[in-house]
Length: 78
Image 1 (cartoon, helix red, strand yellow):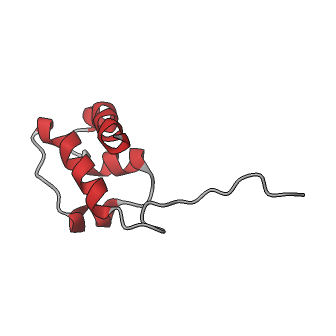
Image 2 (image 1 turned 45 degrees about the horizontal axis):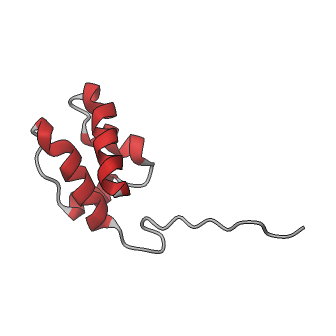
């Protein structure tokens, strides 16, 4: 058997992306009046994927989950 692919989880594992994730989160939540997050705030809630991250950040307004995820992914992908 030969190895055909190797995948790395860069976010937080091999690269410190806390600031990048925080910037994307703040971009995504700003239009909805949420308090701006610090890197420390963000690091406390990361680790379970984007959907769960957004659910934690938007817990008081769950109806915003999907639009915030879309804005987050657009910003972070760019």
